[in-house]
Length: 67
Image (cartoon, rainbow, N blue to C red; front, side, top):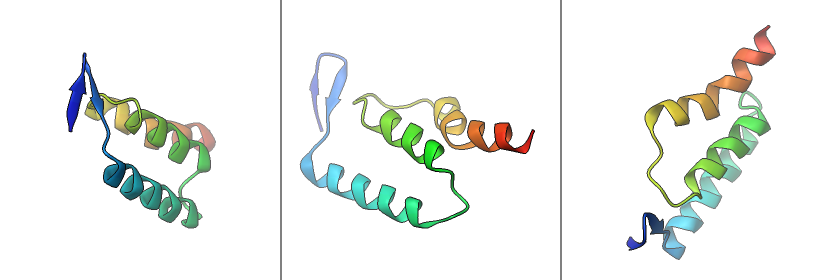
């Protein structure tokens, strides 16, 4: 991956893999759509996400729906 300033330029092949990953996650009824969308947006920012941010993206909506 090349860099532009502080952001990574995501190569087309990686974008295709991420699109397929999102499609597969949407097919799983146990994964909320908003969690998938949050994770996808996080990955598309072009910066390496922090583990806490990934955890929040995936599990914050699950914890809210359990309340």
